Image (cartoon, rainbow, N blue to C red; front, side, top):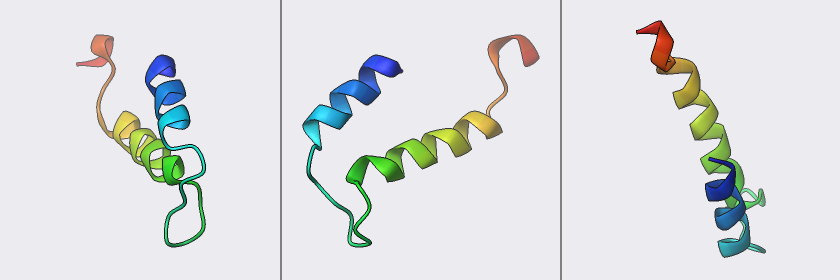
Length: 44
């Protein structure tokens, strides 16, 4: 996951959302929501 975030950070460097936030912020926030909703491997 860390490698993917680093890649996305480089790929979208300087890109902004319509709100002025960095483009990657949406992806990170969405990932956090999904991580909270999906049980970890040992919790199934």
